[in-house]
Length: 158
Length: 354
Image (cartoon, rainbow over all chains, first blue to last red; front, top):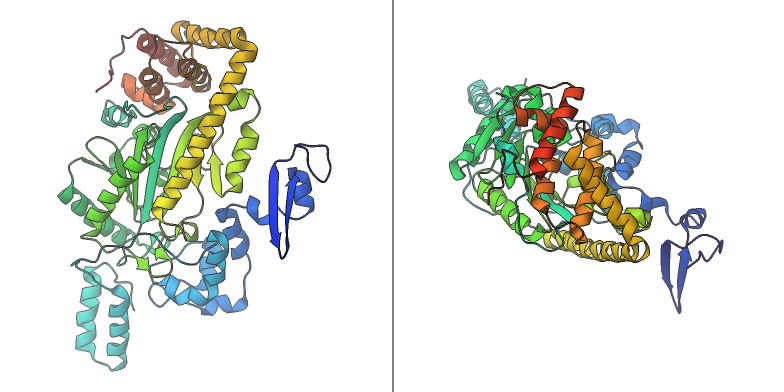
């Protein structure tokens, strides 16, 4: 089948749009699909899309900082990588759109971790406790929390 | 330590009886998982990465037999070999952190520790076997998850370093051999179709690698918003579709130019059986013709297992490990030709373990 637009090259892209009362079906070659602006997002891989979206920066990005690993939103945009499991919840309002665009979805529907008895150790919470303890000038308690953090190798805390 | 070819034997994608094995070379599933209590890769300090390595290792070893490989203790040739066997990723070799690799007893599962994500659990087998491979991979994932907390978010699923892996953290891929589509110049059209439905198409060694020997890798690009089973089923369906088109292309070729193609196939076999100097690329191309010949029933006295084994062992690092010595490129080409001749006459040392 030849392209509906140029009638020269073979049609390799099928485009279908459902409008009220009618359905438009187009069979186009890649060049003509480009001309109509239909190939833009489809051709970009999630990774390329991510690079493009991360390039949109704002001066405020430096001030959005993950309270657990101290990664800033600006640094996240430079590296394209999260710093820890808490970044996502702290950056959420700033990255919701980005994730939706690269995955065409914003909701996980797959498997979940099995709930079991696990020895969990939440660095994030401990750091909060440490901060409170220091504010209260409860140094003995702070030292104790710091030891527990150290046990887990998270001894980068001032 | 150059004679360590244990994983070479393990990595031979074992002979299974799955359909269309000459078209679907192998199936692979990889899961990205991070532990919630450790910073992710870019924020992981070297002391933390040591801890993570030891912790993961002890959990895995407590549950499974198999071997743990400290990547720091390997010679660069051995590291390259693991890559050639598809047991590790190219990125894994570039990590500037302590890294470890767990290999299951049968070689079907490999777990990279301290890659871009804390754990990359991978399953690999010959033929189209994504369902079995995924069952195996998920069993490991669950068992390890009994003791280690995976980073998880209600909306974004399993959390990963890179936003492109969020959700399932699952990448399913198949390696396809499509000479029919290459000869009939239909390959671009078919693969573009795959891209249109959100799949990635790559060469033999994944991202950015060249297409060689008519081998193409197809995998899912999106990891969020679909169930694992749906992602896997999409790849399976697509593989069946492409396999059918490939078979039709082969029929066309054989109706139009039977003698020409038989000639090409038998000449390739003759060169493999007689050549004295053989480069990696030439090997891949000749093996492609040979695989094609086996698939079309033209060649009956060489098995697919032999082709698969040569494809693996003939690679630059593997061939050196096979002979147990470091070889310069020219020397390598000579020894590679020697190995292939022996293998095709049935005299080689590594024999199929079945």
